[in-house]
Image: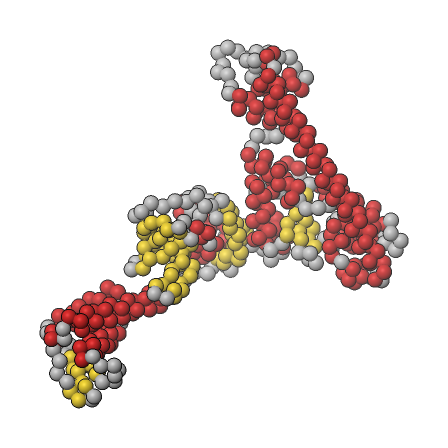
Length: 481
C-alpha cells in the first residue's frame, strides 16, 4: 500500500474542502476498523483498533489490544465497499461542520456568488464551495437573474438542516444597504459616520438617517460623494432603487422634518402620549409629502419611530376648531385647558378620545367624573365627524366620476368635437370658449391621450402620476380630525 500517496490525497482533500487534516486521519482510522469488523463479521466495537502515523502513513491495527497484521487489499469486496461508504459519509459530515462554522462567522457580511437556478421561487446561489438560497421574500421585487450572473448578497442566516447546511442570503434586507455603505463609504466603515436609522421598501425607496461624530465631516455629503459618485454606485447595485440620505437629529421635530424631505413642512405637533406627530404642510406640498402610494410618509414614520399624520393648514385648523368648540361647551373646561391639550399634541377630538381619562385628570387637573364626561362627549363628536368625513369623501368621488364620464362622453360621442384637440374640447365642455378645429397639419391625438389630457384639465391636476396616486391615499394617510 502506498502510504505517501494516501497522505497526499488527504492533504488535497483537507485543502480543497477546508477540513482539518487530523479529522480526516481519524475518519480513515474509523473506516479501517469498520472494514475489519465487517470482514471478520464481529459485533464487538472494541475488538479492533487502528492507528495511522500522520507523517509516514503507516497503519497499525490491533485486535483485543494485541498487534494484528492486516492487508487492506485482502479485505474483500464487501469490506472495501463498507470502508468506502464510511469514508464518504464521514468526509461529508466533516465538510458540513466546516461550512457551518465558516459561514456561521460570516452572518451579516456581503459576499459575491454566482446564480445557479431557481427552485420553487427561490434563487440558488453558489458561494465559494457552498450553495445558498435566496427566498422570494428576501429578493428585490422584479429582479431576475440568469444562470452564471454575478450575485452580490448578504448572508442572513446559517442553520444546520440535518444532512445539509442551509445558508440564507438576502438582497432585500435593510442591512444589505448598510453593508453597501460600509463598502462604498470609508467613513461609515471607520465609524466616523454612523447610520442611526433606516427604513426600506426593497426595490422602490430607502431612507437612511446618518450622523457624524467628527464636526469636520459632513455626514450627508460624505455618503453622497463628489457629484453623487458614492451613492450612484449603491443605486446601480440596487437597480435604480431611490435612496434618501437624511441628516440625523436628536430633536424629533427636526428629524421628522428632515425625513419628509423634499416636502417643505410648515408645522409639527408632537403627542408623546400617543406617539403621534401631526405634520402641517401647504396644499401644494401635500402630494410630495405623502409620496407615491403614501411611500414617503410611510418610510418617514418607520425611520423616526413616530406615527405621522399629514394635514393641510385648513384641515389642521378645522380639527382644532372642532376640538375647541366641543370641549368649551362642557362646564369646567375653558380655553386655557383646550390650549393645554393642543400643546400636548392633541389636535382633534379623536386624540382626546384615544388618550383616555387618566391623562386628562393629570394634565388638566380635573376630577374623574369631569374627565369621563370629556371623553364621552369627544367620542360622540368623533363619530359624527367620521360620518361627515366619509360622506364628503363619497361626494368627492362621485363628482370626480361624473366629470370623467362627461369628458369621455363629450370626446367620444359628440360629432361636433371631431378633429378638435383635447384642450379645446375641454374648454368647450366647461363653456370656456368656442370649438375651433385643430390645424390639419397637426397629427390627431389618440383617444387615450385626449381623455387623459381632458381629465387633467377638468380635475385641475398637474398630470403627474405621483401626485395623482398620492391624492388617492390622502384620506387614509392624513389622519382623523
